[in-house]
Structures are given as C-alpha cells and as structure tokens.
Image (cartoon, rainbow, N blue to C red):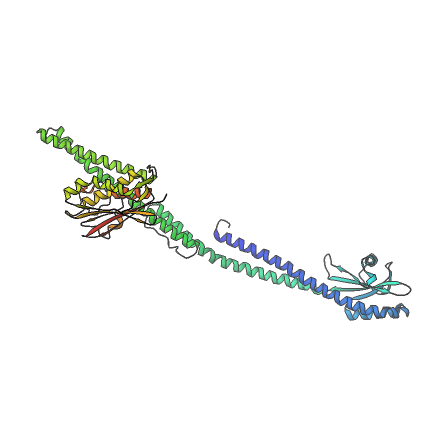
Length: 469
C-alpha cells in the first residue's frame, strides 16, 4: 500500500486520526474524572464538617445514638460514615461491609497524613483493580476533651466508569467516521495528484519514443501544474533542438555535397582526358581549388561554432578603442565599396569610447556584418557604421539600403544555415553560418545582438559591448 500515493496519504491520515483520537480521549477522560473527584471531595468535606459539629454531643450519650446519627447521614449522602480512633478501632458507624479488618486498620495511616493541627482533613482515592466503582475516602479530625478520633466518609463515584464508557464509545464512533472520511477524501485527493502525474509520465514516455509533438494537459496552478508547464516548456525546447539538429545535419550534408560533387566531376573530366586545352584544364583546376577552399571555410566555421557552443573558444577581453577599431574595419572594405559604388558613412562620437572586448573577435564580428551589408546593399546607396554609448554599454550599428528582410524571416536569421532567400546561390550566400557565429562571438564578449529591417528599404544590425569590466 505504501508504494502508491493513495496508500501513503491514507496511512498518514489514519495515523494522524488515531494519535489525535487517543490523545483527545485520554485527556478528556482525565479531565472528566478529575472534575468528578474534586466535586465529590468537596461534597464529602462539606458533609463531614457538618457532621463533626454535632458528633461530639452525641458521643457523650453513647455509641448507639452516634451509630444512628452516622447511619442516617450515610443514607442521606449515599455513602458511609464512621468514627475510628488512632489504633484503627471503629467507635461508631459502619465501614463498607465488603472491607476486611486489614483494610479498615490500614486507614490508621491517614492519621499521619492529615494536618489535624489546622482542622483540615485528608483523602484517599480507591480505584478497583478489576470491577467496581472508583471510590473516595475523606478523613476529618474529631477532637474531644478525653480522646481524639477521625470521622471517615466513604462514597463511590458511580459516574466515573459510566462517563469513561460514554467517552470511549464517542471516540470509537469518531474514529470510524474519521477513517471512512479519510478513505473517501484520500481517494479523491490522490486522484487529483496521480492523474496529472500519470499524464506527465505517459507524455514523457511518448516523448522518449520520438513523439516530439506530445504535450501534457497538467496545467493547473499548483505545484504539479507548474511541473506540467515546465515539462511542456522543456518539450518545446527539445523539439526545437531536435528540429535544429535535423536541419543542421541536412544543411551540412547539402553544403558539402554540392562542392564535393563539383570537385568529383571536374577531376574526372581531367582524368578522362576530356579537357584537352591547357586553358580549359587550368580553369577546371582553379574551380577545384575554389570549391576546396569553400569546403575548408565551411569546416572552419563549423569547428568555430562547436567551440563556441562548448565554451572552448578563447576570448581575451581587454579595453578596446572602438572608434579606432571601426576605422580600421572601414578601411578593409574600401575596395568592395568601390566595386559596388557604395558610399561609406562613419558616425563616430567626438569622445573616445572604450569597451571590454577581444580585438580579434571584434574584427571577426565586424567583418561578418560588413560583408553581409555590402553583399545585400543596393548599388550606389549609403552604408552606415555608427558608434554610441548608452549607459555602461557601447552600441555599434551597421546599416544598408536594399531588399531588406521580411518580418517572418527576421527572428530566424541567427539560426545556422538559414537563408532569407531560398533561391540565393551558395556562392552569394556564403556558408550560412556567419550570423550564427556573430551572435555567439558577441555573447562570448558579454554583449547582445539585434536586427531590424524594413523590406525594400533598409536593414540595421546592432550589437552592444560592456564599457565596464
């Protein structure tokens, strides 16, 4: 039973009910008995005090009048009264008939227990071993000129056992009702817990078997619901990662397949002697070298991405003069700007701005962004590089005018091998890894990247770098 949530809930609740019921029963029984005993003791002391006041004159008349007085008072109180001297001899009245002489004589011990000097009394509570009622005995001093004696008042407390029995019955009924309620409540409570857990478990099994569309319905607002929501979020991320993995493998194989096929075809043409002219062979060999270099760039980009993913790529951050670094990058792309008839606009602030960055990685980021900006800019349009400081960050932006990027494509441009134009040739589009590498490099330098574009108008890429270490 303890292997199920229902069993654990049931046993724990029953244990709580048992402990609570037993504790309540013992405490209630004790309080009731204590109240009855105190009440009876008070009554006996009151009756005994009244009897002591009239017993001395009666004793002077002889034992029989004293016996008659004590017997009448015993009948009135429902108990028994008798006088006994210090030696244990009964002077008047009658002790309980079922008492032995040893029991009567043992009451002489009360003489030593009582505080006679103050006129007080003492009491003894008699509890039966097996059957019978609990009883209480009260002893009060009776002083006379010739002798001293003690008045004993005996009374059974009939209600103790009866009340204890009633309490036991009530507790038993309460216990049965509590257990039944626990079973019912525990059943529905356990179902409310196990049902969403079971749904999460079944969903996890389906997900593990390759059903990446499987989602759990456990979306309540409690801890289990939050677990279900977390599981669904994890499933979304894993499904996206699996989709990216498959796309990555497909893209890598396709990117490698095209140049390898081209190299194979060109090499076989040369080997078969079909390229008869030296100029033709030279052209084929140059194409082979070009495709080989392209494969090499792809492999290097993949290696760099894997190092960035694993955090193994060395990034040495130091204070870098961004204005000077951007000027150097602008000089590097000068020939490409001239070829496309592009006008470079370099917006640098009057004050120098330093950021914590790796100079080589910064140059690589700018090279990727500027290469894309030049490649996809419309001819005879401006290309703008801007630098500014916002709080404790430096912001660098690269803008061009051209076809732009559609809103549906913009969130995905940082993905590996993603191409905005599916018909774009790989010769024009590079390896498709440049922006993915750019994003990883900027993040490795504790920066952030973003992009915004208005289709057929302008596109701006921005990234930030910290100015404080």
